[in-house]
Length: 458
Image 1: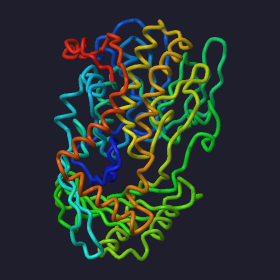
Image 2: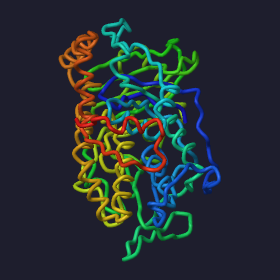
Image 3: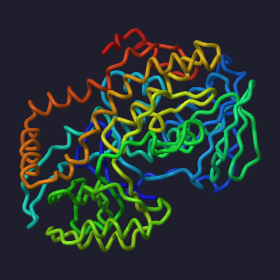
Image 4: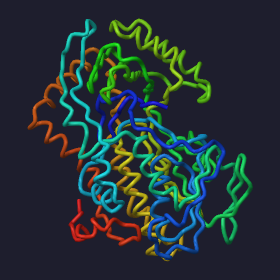
C-alpha cells in the first residue's frame, strides 16, 4: 500500500503525498509472530501476571504493546489485515507532551531521521494559475513522519517481545469473573485478563463491547478519498489544490520521486450508504463527485482512480463515546476519540498508551482502578485535541464561492510568519493540555530521564 494524501494531525491543512521509499516489514498472512525473548528489551515484572490482547497493529496497538510488554505483561496483538499496513497519512507531533512521550519511548531522534520534507503547497485556479502559496513550516509540527513508517518502527521495536497475529480478528467477547473469553474469526479461542481496542475509527472491539457504530460515530457532512497516481506534473515535495463549491481535488508529491504522486478528493455530501469492501462502488461515488470540475488535471486524477488498487475512502467523522472502558475492555486511540482528519490523533494515541500503561503499573494491574484513572487523565485531553478536526471538511472544500475566497484569504494571512507562529501556538495548546505524569516505566529511554523534572503542565 502506498502513501495516501497527507492530512496533518495538527489541524486541517492541504498537505498530502504520494508513495514513500521507506518499506515496512510484511509478516506472512494469517500467521503469529512469536516473541523472541532473547532479544527483548529490558523489562520489569510489574505486570507479569497479566495476559493482554490488543486489537489493531497500526499505531496505538504497537504503542501500548511496547509499554505493557516492557512491564512484563504477556501481550498478543491481533490485526485483521494480512500484513503490516504500509502507507497512510503523514502525521505530526507538537509540543512538550508529545516530545516527552516520544523521548521516553526512545524514538524522538529516529523520527527526525525519517521525517518528511514537504515544501510549499499552492492553491490554484481553474486555469492552474497560482493564487495562494502556503509555506510548509506551518503545518508539520515539531516533527512529521508518514504513518506507515511510524507503524513499521513501532513494530520493529516490539516484534521480539510481543506476539503479532495477522489476518485475524476478534469475533466475540465474553467477560467472566476471572477474565475475558475471546473467540476469533480464524484462531482458537483464548482467555485474557484484559482486551485493548486499538483498532481505529471503525473499531470492531468497540462494536462488540459497547454497541453498534452509529451510536458513537458523528458524521460531518463530508467525505475524503486518497490514492496514488503518476507524477505527471513533475512535482517535487510540493502540492497543488483546486476547489469548487463543496469539492476539492489535490495532487502532490511528498517524497521527491519523479514518477510518483498522490491524489486526494474532499467533497460535501449527505450521508452515503456503501459497502466498505466494495472498492468499485467507492470509485463510482468518487468519480461522480469529480465529474465536471474545471481544473484541467482532474482527468488525470480520474484516470488514476480507475486503475488504483490503493484507495482510501471514508466519511469525515468523529467518535463520541461516554466512557472508554467496559469491564475488562478499554478503548485506545481512534477507537475511543477518533477523528478522520485534523485531530492530532496519532500524538493522542501515543500519549494515551503511555498513560494507560502507567496507570496499570500504579494500580498493580487492577484494571478497575487503572481504567478509571486513565479516563480521568485522558478524556478531557483527547476531546480537546479532537475538537481541532471539527471544521476540516468546510476548510478543505468550502460550500460556496464566497467561502472559498474567505478560506484563501485566511491562507494568505498564514503566509506571514508572525500570524503563522500565533496560529501554530494555538494548535499546540491542545496537544500540550495535559499534566503528564512521570511513571518511571521499564523500557523508558535513558535519555529521557533528565527530562523527568520538566514542568509539563499546560
